[in-house]
Length: 104
Image 1 (tube, rainbow, N blue to C red):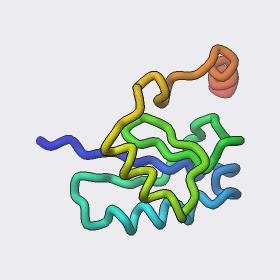
Image 2: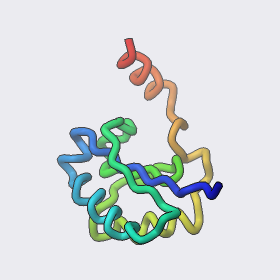
Image 3: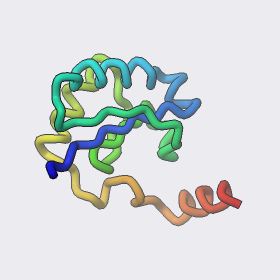
């Protein structure tokens, strides 16, 4: 089984205010003919709201994505992935406290 590349666009409130739905539509269109790439909109906040629109590419988060540069930046990340240290799940203790507080 071939592993698909996974692109998640945060469509939580703040990212939507900054154009997340337009970014999602642009990426969906750009990769619609590529069966090896899955583009999804997720309401799950990545906790980088001030840096949005945020897009996770195979777990690595790209910040400040705009419709005009979305495809170029995602394609670049797919070709040359960032270190996993920069990826989803790598947060400061303060950020983790906020996540845990939100769960309880």
